Length: 256
Image 1 (cartoon, rainbow, N blue to C red):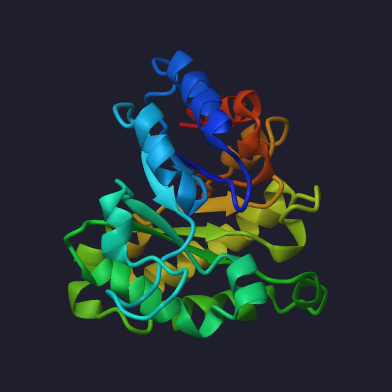
Image 2: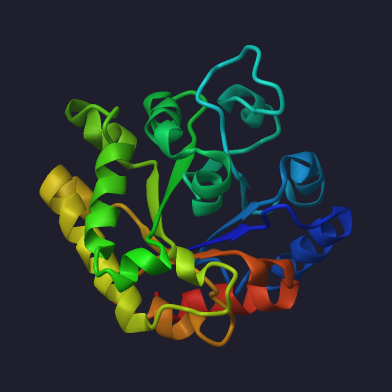
């Protein structure tokens, strides 16, 4: 099970300390869960300072597909590695909708997964809008996003790069709205993704972790994580509350 915190454009130095302390206090209970925290880029060094020796993965919210150059405000894989990052989110719906990232997702994913040094884990985010779900095109949208995202990755080396790939299903209509997909709705899409990966990547596709994101909280986490094809969560707003995030991580241990 994975539980990943995505702070988005929130948080501060004090929250880094508070969350690190909350997770450290439950360290023995949470050993079976892989925990990652993705703070804003300016807080990456602070998280390393307060939690660098804990068994918590440091993640970034985005990466540029270029190694260096005139890309003001962006961060390359190598720059992220300098701060201790070993996991990066790619294709979050907010990046796609607000910053036009959809055409860049494949290049970003290939940049991360083709390079073995630094060895980064990529969390590919996919999900449909409310209009697309109403039109009953959820599976069409998800398949198109997966196909495009993996288009620059060679199948000949799938076992090498797939071991560092996680896919997060985040229905856009559930992100930050307080409306969560029911466990049955989430499982239906996760099962579709699993079937697609298995058809595309054969046995390797059965090993890629699938996470659910979209208004996950301490109250609904257990039911979501109990579904057969849900391997954890990508947590937004609830990750800004240290106790709520720890409770979600605890729910993941009960689903192992």
